[in-house]
Image (tube, rainbow, N blue to C red; front, side, top):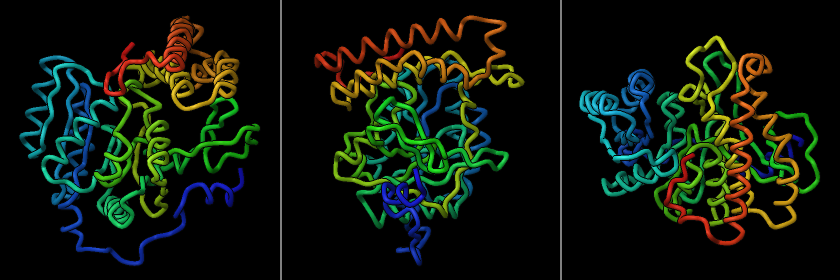
Length: 340
């Protein structure tokens, strides 16, 4: 896809506001930063604490999906130290379900603007202001920054999903787009939007549990009459997979959690958003797509364990079942998480 055609998909990609529309402190006072946590107190102590310190006017809402009593205690202590608001569900509601709980609390507390942030992401004050200024100026816009990893490599500056087979492309990709068109999406690692747009889009679909919720949410925003904006003057740093990587960081392999939900939820998305012909194409490419997801962790992992392949097989089976349920209209409601 050419740069020009990608710019046509992501409205406002090159547009930067000439000046803040309101005083910085007043703008941030209207903002809630929402993080969904699962046994990641160390990440929050490093990342979210830095974000909160850089933007003390904004309220911070931490949704702690329950893992263990010890992890819950560490989060409540950390939140008390930094004056964060906590939402404490008694189960693991997943990313989307947790974001919905956090947004509900933020709205109840009077927030008008939301910044959705991963535990393993960090954003400086200037970039945060650039995001919320756009969200305030365009209440029907979902706004995302350019995302880099801690080495400075750009890992996300807008994506499309190819409707022919469910493969992904970035704006910088030189690979050809297969026939069938694309849909744009913004990474859920860091997003900003108005509470009005969050409610118009219906929040996140909790059924995904982990991964692909941002692809789905981008589609829901556009279906609600919203648009996507990539703020090129805003930068977030995100070491992708830090919450779901293998304990041995010397290995490239991702965790079974990463593999399972990336493979399963591709087929759930197809069942929820695509017509019958497109769904058949995605089913036909399910095995090569699952293989591609596994190989993101490198080939060497397969020399010591067949577990990634077993996980891929289970994820494909379960994804096909969810797709069939979506077609029949028998899926649980969108507020019901579907963990493995």
